[in-house]
Length: 192
Ligand code: AMP
View 1 (cartoon, rainbow, N blue to C red):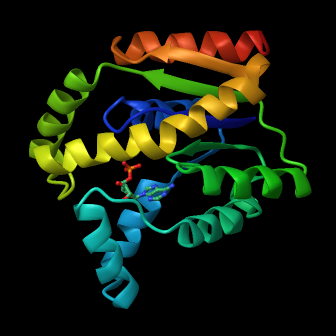
View 2: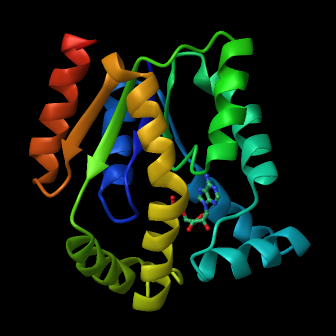
């Protein structure tokens, strides 16, 4: 099963992707998690990434495309994957779709998490206290939401038009367990 998750930061898509990947026994590919792991390397790239990520800006398309291309053809993805946080720009989306086509990776489902930005801001500020993420303070959160609106929302719109039969909008303000059930029900039913 090959799944893509869209949604603004703080919409709970990471939590849902983790739970769903476990239930379906597929790989959870969170580009945010992959990049955060790289921050521990202590090399020049990690310093560059830290600066970009802690300000809420996006890391370059080239870096992300390379990371994802390597992962998608790895053994870990043989059973399928959930893409969480990628593609995030039109350029990443173009790369991904052409990569998917040449490697015969047909997407099964796309979930788009919708949520009020005010609620997101509250959630992220609470999360920052628990996880101590350096990109979770209010100004940075606003910048991340702004990046989402300008860069990623158009990508989700493109997918909603081009994968109409497999595209499902989720009300992300609901409880975790309720969303979990909704995702499973949609997966069982398959296409619209
Ligand atoms: P996330 O945990 O998905 O919110 O990602 C945390 C940060 O990692 C983002 O604010 C970006 O700086 C960076 N990042 C994650 N995924 C991408 C991506 N696909 N393209 C560019 N930057 C990304």
